[in-house]
Length: 273
Image (cartoon, rainbow, N blue to C red):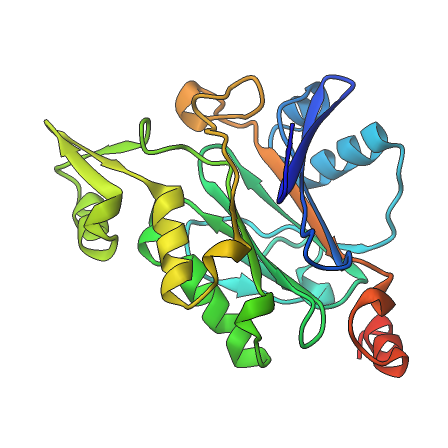
């Protein structure tokens, strides 16, 4: 299955979703390793998941590996050796500008969000936006975080949202402080009361948060899978996948001279300067 912003493939019983940016020369790689025997056996452990996917792909990587301990917050890590495995500092975002590193987040109903651009130099931002992350607007705050570090051309910033749990299946009890907070912080277009439950549209809310930051609608790809409904492909905590996690792995391309820069600047980027 393919669309302009992603392709879903099957390899030896494993489902792999690759995020694509057809409007640009290739400047990053981002793949979500979904349901499959190797990922199941890894039980959400990032080091074991990475080992499983490289064995599956018959590939190797000498990149430094960052895989934060996700805590449903809005903290974002940058590339530092002290953040690399086996260390796992608490964070729900990872900002990459150096092709010497690769990063991972894990998911089972929470929503993967990827932001990326080739300008002013190639970068990619990975975000874990579960219910609490969406209420705290990690997507919008993440874009602000990048804007504080570099000048952004929003016409060349791209976003991918999903796959996560859809609005038909994600609900919370009305009698909960976080539910009340969500009803206040998330647009009423993205939640609905049904008896004693409140149903939330997390992917839709995230899209709205990014568009409120002036990201172009045409540059946002919504991945049309629901982690709860599409259990053939996805793990779902609400369907009793308590430890299994889909494994997002991303890095910048080492062929950074495909960007729109002078070669000497690309050489500096390759050296991590």
